[in-house]
Image (tube, rainbow, N blue to C red):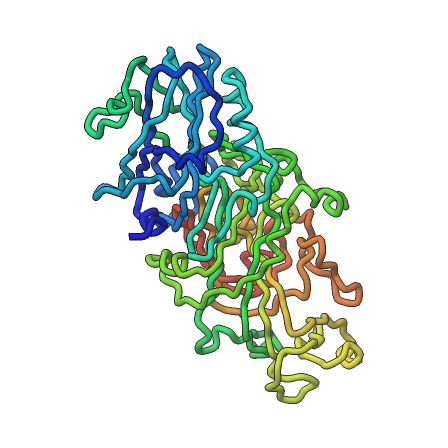
Length: 497
């Protein structure tokens, strides 16, 4: 069995083994007098946490991780020593029947009163270099500190459909007393290993995926109210998506409450400051749009499209006021301009243009604001005494939040109110119908400006996530490497805007 497939098995426990001499970096030399072995348990799914964000959990997904490197740090604050080593995948032993990689070498260690254990899987080179240069006295602080990276620097999709993702301790709670004189064989003993500890790790990123109901029946038909009657006006012919407004920083090891680094964590868009402060966020994901899988939604089988994906969308978590349990209070911190989103691009073909039946390819058209009819020019639309919206090349756009707390909106609870994202989660949106037209541009993309000749775009970065203006609904589910599920449907009655 190929190694990358072996890592698809549940919660995998990994015993550390050394690299080949050519793969192994130079390690600081200390007067090591013992051996230790570490087992790394890979994420099985998100754990229960206090952060309001585990909305509609729906099981877990093992993932498809490729393990390239494992770097372990043994920090002896009593002696002021940090022992570390990196292990390459070429040195891993075969998995046993219990999903354990049996080690063939142990890690040299310095005996002392208290040894803290820190593990980094698939570590970014710069982050590892910083940790290796950190003293024992400062190590815990640096490991809990922030790193200025974007998602593409710590997570990638591979050609063989595996994913190489940086992972770290889930908490700073792994310690042992290294006893002097423990031999390599003692440390590696399968039944009763000495100087041994198990460390649980989590992925530092979130993951996002969008699927769409297969194009059958009228679920890809766009409708509008014309003279009070629901009327088909266009057909969607293709759906792509990307993810925007990710973080540019993360904590190497997550905070206990899952808070994310400033300035994003405390930033709340106000007045016109978003045009300057949107530099806090990463929009590079909007440079890579992916065709949404056509999939008949089944809440019990979301793992199927996850495994079938031929790409991956990673984001660094964004959240605000994580200790505030009252969502009516927390809502004030979540605005459209500081929350991570899916941008959905749907290509459509009008059923009529200028009052005549149309069956050609997608093209630039103008939608009348009053009559909901398509015109070939702005002048023809405006001649009917109305404004018109230009849709270039037959493309309309939707914005969906990755993790909305709820989609059932009332006057008292104008959901969604919050949409936090946390590491080691998969957020999945599923569109089952295009019941209303989207928008011509996404004002939450700094590079997608509004045409001044179009009516005002209803998306304002300073607005809360749910406002009175509604233009869409969608069928959505949210999962993590623990799974969450949602449903929307793109319509005026509104779950989003």
